[in-house]
Amino acid sequence: MEKPIGYIELMGAVLHGCINRWKCLLIYIIVFFDFPGNHTATASSAFSFNGTSTITSYYSNRQAYGHAVPPEYLSLQLNSRLTIFLVPLNVSSVLSTQQHQMAQPINHVSVRLDVRELRRFIRNDGRYRFLKGVETFELGRSRPVYSRLILHGVPVSGVNVSLRARSFHTSFVYGNSQQPVRKGVYLEQQYRQKMLFGRMGLGHQDKTFVAFSFLHAQDDPESIDPAGRYYVWPADTLIHHLDTLFIPSDSAMVSRQPGEVLIPGIELGTALFKRRFGLSAELAGMIHTANTAGDTIRIDELPDWVDRIHPVRISTSVSYAYHINAELRFPNTRLHASWRLIAPGFHSPGTPLMSQDQRHLLVRGSQSLFNKKLTIQPHYRIMNNNLLDQNRASTHTTIWGVTASWRITNMPWISVSFSPHRQEMADTDYPSLNKAKVVTVSTGKNYELWEQFQALTSVSWSHQQSSVKHAGSERLYRGNNISVQQSLTLQIPLRLITNAGVYLLESEKSTTSSFLMMLRGNYTISPRWSVSAGGRYFAQGTDRRRWSARLEASYSFRRNGSIQLLAEPIYYRDVLNPEREYDQFVVQLRFVNSW
Image (cartoon, rainbow, N blue to C red):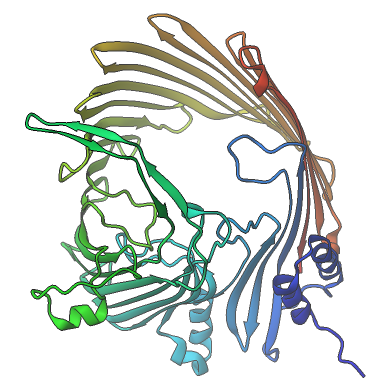
């Protein structure tokens, strides 16, 4: 007699074995409606599994311009708690048809130890005292955060572990930070990238600490078959006072090459005067090889152990980065200052969005006065790039300003901010200077109208003056934006929200006006039924119009979860660019079940 398929096996089939979207949908609906209620752990129970399952179906008659979201998709999401012998694990997964063979995967499974709940178990049961030092334990997809310069939030499919024994702590991350993308050519393709990160240190980050980190990432050259493309150099002529050189046209095959990077780093900090003053710093160095298939070279000045760790090749480069952070904390006063330098060429696979070749100074503060009724927050920021003058253009940006907020009980709150911007680009051919001043004033109040009505009224006004100067000419702009928001909550229960705004942009040659209005209402018919409806209207001058209506309804099946429906028609008209006009209709259906 065959053994019946259990819930865990069925979920595994959903998460790992589904290829066809309709088979996924059928299996998930069976799981969604057939799970026998909510199971929780008891003193005699060794196993429990509960959570929330969500299936979302989305359809649109067109794909939004510039968006990667397809016009139709199906996604399955699981957020659950798995408890095995009182050890709590948070299990989450996503399975979606949005996954594309020319992009990094969306589908994933993540298992994370709930450290806070585990510590509560340890206090009640001495058998789990050996797990006391576990700070982080994750399997599958995780986003480890250990270093601002080296590893900070990049998705890694593998293992992430952090342990602590009093003042000693260590962390370990290993897995794939990048999956292979085999389709496409040149920059569209991506190798599978394996990442190894380690960290050891003493102390606590909110006190005095020191930590040593390293990261090694390497592309797997066998994970893809590089498809190149020809790059053509046009013919050129170089005129010199002694001679004239004629350079003929040439071409070369260009393809994605496997790379390797090694980054060691050190981080240290201290907290003094009862943690009122904190100072921390981090320094990281980088050895990067752009093509691990290139020829190796010998540098006599380097010791042999460097070549064994990271062989030096023709495409090998070195760089560095550092970050210094200081904080001053008092009950009513906060001051923060940071200085960051990212040298040219420095990049880490663990912080892919970090800017290169840049200096950044930031100073901000917060001062509370009159028993915290008045708060003043100044800020000052400087950014510049092209640190070694290797590029033709350099950009220097300065931003400073101050925000003041006034809040008194039973009185409208008021917020005023002023912020000038200045950006200067030094270019040998096209230098430019951009300046702007922004003033924003907002006020509002929550209040009660009779006993049945709760209301909120807020008004905001902003004024911007900007100038763009380049190539001997200067353009001046002036903009004003006014918005009003009104919400009303009744005990029916019914809530109405309306928002209207006007924006005027003036220049020397023309004036453009924009108008936006939004209205939304939420009504709870019964404990099982709720409905939300609204609309948006946007107009820019007399040429562009965009309006939409939105209807949302939800119904609870109690034991078997709930269903949510969204329908939204959208219309856009453009007199100047008729080819951009469209009629769009969006429908989204979602099932949610807590078990």
